[in-house]
Every structure is written in structure tokens, then in C-alpha cells.
Length: 84
Image 1: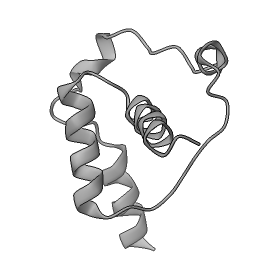
Image 2: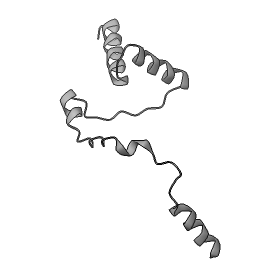
Image 3: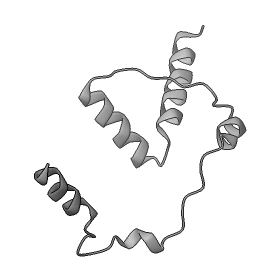
């Protein structure tokens, strides 16, 4: 028991340096309004290869796009090339 009390005492001690983000404003919680505004209300989750994930993120960053925008544009290009 003495060890657990000691452990609790160690946890209650404040850190030597306080985090600097305490003075920054809090981010507003997401209320899904932005998702509804874009029409993106459904979640899509999948697993991909590491190389594909890295390439996709790099492309999106280079072109200042969201990942979903890259996927949407890629899908549109694929449909156009197949002329469905």
C-alpha cells in the first residue's frame, strides 16, 4: 500500500513547465454543420497500403486539397475514362 500512495503523490505533482496551449482559445466542438454544408454526411473507412496512403496525402497537400476531394476527383476521372 505504501507504494501506491507514493505513486499517487507523484501523479499529483505539477510539471516543472506548464503547457503553453493553456492561453490559446479552445476550438469549437464540431456540430456537423460543415459536413452538412458540403453534403458529406457519410463516413467511409478502408485500409490501404502504406505507399498509397503516403502518396495520396502528399498529392493532397501539394495541391491544397482534402483527402476526400482527391478521392472524389479521382472517382470522377475514372468514371469519365470508362464512360459509364
